Image (cartoon, rainbow, N blue to C red; front, side, top):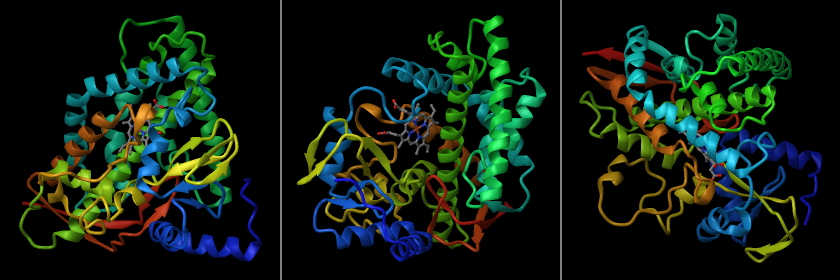
Length: 383
Ligand code: HEM
């Protein structure tokens, strides 16, 4: 059943609604749909029924062969798993260094800062030497710095900025490819950074440029969700605790609840491999079926007070609903535990001996390859 292109006025309407509040719009689409599968106005399908969503993410029918995470870059599932795990391992091993760098970076943080850009800076600057070690040519490291805010990390809504980002992306890929060639000529026995981890994952047949592209996928997939979730955590905790006392919740609860209430990855997709029926509807090979972690986490049948940001729920005994900010099933995010550690560490360091308040805050997301908070200001007052 191919998704028909919508007539222009319809397209304009859904774009407007999507801009106003993407999450509310998804809820509205769910309300309007009688089945457990929503046809999305921009193409593809969203599985809104929670049990069906679980089955989509876990059943072998939709979870065989390579995952979509690396696109067409890696030829086999073995290569995907090996590179994912090697990256996770190097990040995990360097957590103590992340903590030390973070302390240095936080010492420079002005009292008032603009978020979510500051979240990206904090995470990136604390992780920079783990992405590309300090002996990597300065020019290459500088291009990675520029990529952070140059439209490579998050796609710009403006065409001219996208064109500029493409040029920057091209330069970065070329520079990292040069570095790959150099490192392959002079191998070292251990992973000094994420690029070494990719090179050391036993995938020697990959072209130099492919390794560079895989590195860029990992760079974006680490920094963007970690920093966006950090920004959501600060925003939501500040909005829900306005008194002068310290936050009454440990950082780990705040981060988990922020990922439930405002999951940054807004759709987790699976491609239909063969003609099938799902949720009572027929699907063809190539159709995209997605799960919205937001809808799953706001299903009132599974989550109590689903619309309320309530970090204390993570201390309560009893069953919680399905929790899929990192996906689920065989393709679950391999970096989940290290991501939680990075975010919790950062939130703890930000609030240690300091009080945070926000101004200009709005809990509606903006969609930039994920649900990201709209710009707001954080005032950090040291005790
Ligand atoms: C808050 C931070 C993060 C979020 C929300 C997140 C979310 C996700 C999601 C939703 C998926 C797809 C899962 C699926 O299809 O079922 C995924 C896959 C993946 N993530 Fe993450 N991720 C985060 C951080 C990281 C980090 C730090 C790493 C670094 C190792 C990482 C590496 C990967 C890899 C390699 C995959 C592909 C897994 C596979 O196909 O086997 N992610 N992530």
